[in-house]
Image (cartoon, rainbow, N blue to C red; front, top):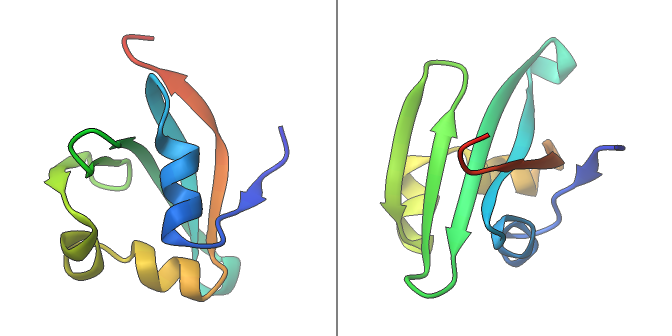
Length: 92
C-alpha cells in the first residue's frame, strides 16, 4: 500500500474510524527519522486513542482540543509530515 498524506484532522478521523487502528508515520528531522503511531477514532465518543511506537506509550480519551495540546499530530498535518500507512485490526 502506498502512503497517503493526511490532509486535515477531519481526514484523520475518516481514516481512523474503523474497527481497528490506523497506522501512521510522522516524518521528523527532514526525513532522517519517523515516529510511528497507531490511532483509533471513535465517532460515538468523539475521542482518539493513540499508541506511540517510539516509546511504547498510550494516550486515550483525547478530544479534538486535547489532540492540539498533548500531541504533535496537528503540527505534523500542517507541515505535510503525517502519512497514513494502513490498518491493524484489534487483536491481531
